[in-house]
Image (tube, rainbow, N blue to C red):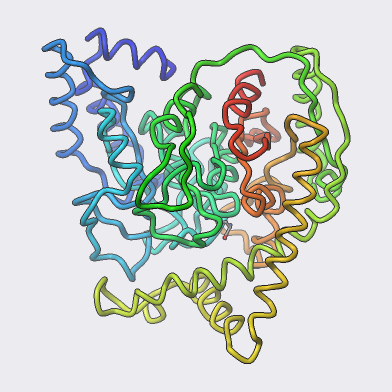
Length: 451
Ligand code: GLN
């Protein structure tokens, strides 16, 4: 059953919200031991909320757009009364004291928070292997990583443990696992969704976004969480209430880039993407145009100094006085690498030269995309250059960083991008990425819906 059908069934009382939640809770109990997608399951709270929703429907009261749907939340987004661990030892004892803007909006629309998901520690990673709560398994491609860092949220959607999940994407953390687990994942334009209540990885790049099995569900969730917030000055006032009503698109100009093709290590992935592109072109009577994105090959090198510095600065509050343990004494290897790297780059002697260089390269990448979008409506690319590796395989951190070569450019440019399943290779899901100009989410959803 897709989200639209379920939304209706619940409203018509053909499916009780309580039964929807109960069936997820049972499935989680039975199957999540081997996947490890949740850190905390909000059994009691979710059932209580579901009863309230059912009562409202029974009494013919108006209910919200997410009425009775189960929402899983990445453990770096504040939910009042739930553990916001960031999958770290550092924040093991921290319980959310308030609702993030996105959570407030979900609750206002009668969505039901079913639990807090596992993730790469502090969202640092692309594989789901760096959590202090144990690694997350890919529920669809057994024995392989699910991708990350929104690993638990994505695995929970793919395994059928919830209707929709929230992830965060700084350099690909929604799109990369969406690709590996065969679901839809959206990174909204920077400023589309309020970051108030998110424990940041890198505040100039982070965005909260939806993961779902279908495009409609992802669009619906983005409609709910998007919009201006007084608590996040980077958000904009713009109409966001029509993402989930799709019109059929025709005569698109679809951009492809050789610069991405050459970075794709596993050529089978590129071939699969091209096959899907050919289908789209035929179906929508569209055209392909090549775009020049010569600076995207610098994306990974540009991204990491920015993330290191911003992460280092953001983690200074975790000094052990307020939230629990001092981060340097309690974190894993990858988090420590970023703190030490960020401290080094920020040293006064360097006068900000590395950070400034990265900012300059970021501008060039954004400019490439801006120029490209004068010629084309959307750009289609693979999501990752390789298939997800097998659990236990040793991958160097540099190779891990290179995983995000196709996803980072959208974050650096602040544009929106989404991933949809394109097929499988050796039984492993492979996604396709559509990039659209900043604040063109509606177009993005329409293209995803046509794929
Ligand atoms: N893999 C990237 C990193 O480790 C992206 C993380 C993210 O998007 N949260 O920084």
